[in-house]
Image 1: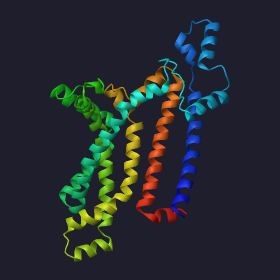
Image 2: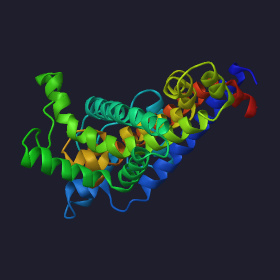
Image 3: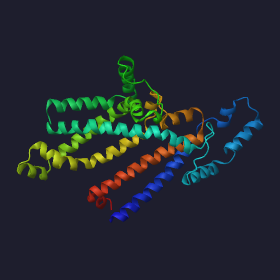
Image 4: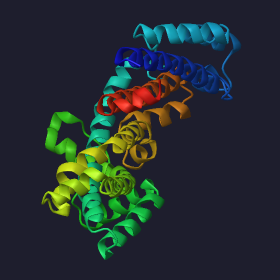
Amino acid sequence: MTMLAYLVRKAVFLAASLLMASLVVFALIEVIPGDPATYMLGINARADTLAALRAELGLDVSAPARYWHWISGMITGDFGISYTYRVPVLDIVIERLAVSVPLALYALVLAITMAFPAAMAAAHYQGSRGDRALLAITQFGIAVPNFWLAILLVYLFSLVLGWFSAGGFNGWSEGISAGMKALTLPAVALALPQAAILSRVMREALIDTMREDYIRTARAKGLTRFQALLYHGFRNALIPVLTILGMQFSFLLAGAIIIENVFFLPGLGRLVFQAIAQRDLILVESVVFLLMVAVMIVTFIVDIAYAFVDPRIRRSRA
């Protein structure tokens, strides 16, 4: 299979997945009990007032008509008007992305910074006490919920040491350093479990790579075990790690709802939580679908990167 044919095939699958995801999101939102108009006006509102508001919000038409209006607007960049905030959904999303995207990238960089050196050290000293200690620590990091870590971090670094604020985000107008400081504890809370996962995957990939014939050949030519690990093993071990990195960025972007609520961050996760509580259906639908689009696009990019790095992958999937 040529690279162009592989790209076209993956793009078709991506489009079909996005269509299915939009149907699932819309159907799930539609079955949520309650009426947004009744929520906004109260249970004692007059029937004609409720009818007028439902017509204004576009709730007086059939579900298929609402789906078509919503999805066609998404394609053209019109995400609709928020029921609660009465402003375009796109404006709210862009405002919240200014927090969620830097937070996800910050956490991903921290996870890579912690995981890669630890995995290389564990693979180099395989079977040693340090290796066993890393496995125990990573097992603990995978098992512990990140919101529990967030509470511990707030207690230690905010209440006890006073190095960071307990939550909140004043925006980037106060400077990059102030903004990054406000995101540090949330990023650490998100990064620690991801670093545990990434280090275990990286360690196993490095150990498997070090058993290959070309590594033995490099050792026979005079390279030390660490030099062979660094110059030959590391690059080849990155291939399976690419998938984990893509999945982790998607999770950090779409799965930070609890952390953003713990630290009172005005990001996409907290926006979804507030929109659900306020019965703002159009906002919930649009944000959830955009997060799913981000996850699918990242996965698509990782698949394409796989095919470029290792042509055997696209041949095996032909």
